[in-house]
Length: 390
Image 1 (cartoon, helix red, strand yellow):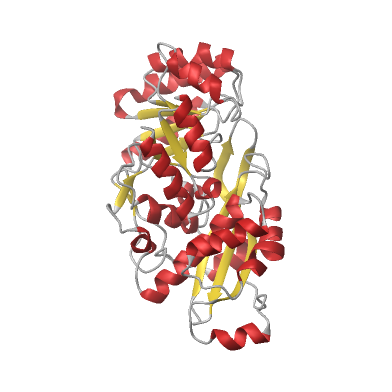
Image 2 (cartoon, rainbow, N blue to C red):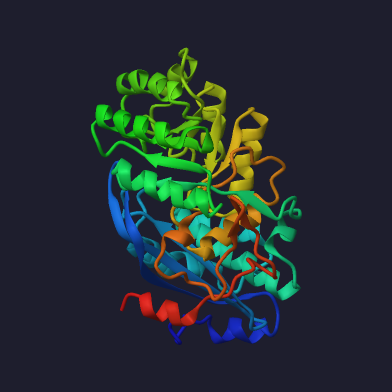
């Protein structure tokens, strides 16, 4: 992390002392290679990019947060370059001098400074929870009502597009007792080719694994109506965002068709208002919860509350976060009463090098909540310097 952090004015700093006021905020872009190509319908990546945010309090404690994107502004409008620019120019100045433990007030200040920018805001809020938790000596989950579980079932994503490679990869994960649920990215190939690929995966893995499919908005309603029953016949348990995010009516119509497997809403739900619209339309059976979409840990809880009220199950989504971002998600996932579909925070395992000194624990098909105050992780400064953009 750069030594020269943006500072508050001397007049503000004079009144901070050793308290919980936000004294400095800094951000840096890092690019970490992945162990294999990760291929989605709209892009593919061989290195995952993050913005690492540090928030220093007046008491000297520093908190860490992370914003992730996939291949630039393709999954959403945010890129790591834009995230850093907006943090440095707009969000950080709006927060300097405020109390770090007033999370809602911080969120309001960020919303007044910039529209959307949910990944940027989520990274800062994660760092605030980390810093306040460290100050008080409690995990971030305690600041959200307390943890109900110390581990979450975790899936692995198959995204090379090569069924032979994917079967081999899945077999290794099963043998190591790391993952027994696999999400398969489709949409980069023609639908008939993806269906043939899925047929091979289903036949090879059989009842030893659960399969989920993610189209990342690649299909239209007609293609979805043809493919979804085929996936159901293969035993696919859940299909994520088959149609574009704007087409909630199509999701509802598809869900009502006989033979459609349960549908998972992702890109169509960024905030609680979106969640209300999806639930009211009867457009999804589950929703993918992500800090990068919902603007922080509090946003995750707000969307989850609306989903639960609407009878929509919860799924812990990810955007290939490192252990920094995964730990933040685990802190809030641990506080949810129900997380029926587990989570997909396999991101730390797909990186050639993680960004923390003690990576998260994967064992017995679960991902474990890290022990310790705040997010429960310690940033690896050497790794940060190695992968930071200059």
